[in-house]
Length: 143
Image (cartoon, rainbow, N blue to C red):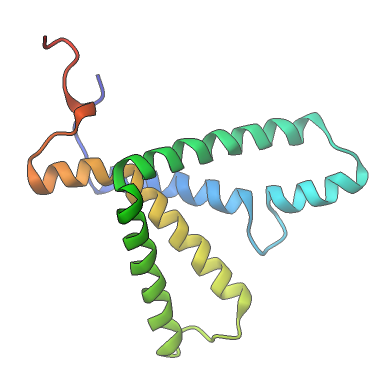
């Protein structure tokens, strides 16, 4: 049975894996699966590319499924609205220039990672805030 101990370190680990997943899939630096695949299609598709693609797909399925299950559609919309308006404020206040597409892309990818990490952690956070268990938390040994 999984440990019920959830803390800030647990969230940071989920965030770190979400950042790796998102930035390994695509980032504006040119070092991502997207760029590797784009260049690879010109020189020939390799088995390692397929293997890496499968690993990334598994990661995306795990994170998206957990996020949709824990946050739901309304929670997901609220999370994206929250981070979207946060980005809007940062641009409006002049902290990030609106014409810096690369910087904005990095920020959007980081915010997407935050949404995924929150989605992976939300059941734990909700249980801490409310004291209520999820259906998944019920011990299977109880009849």
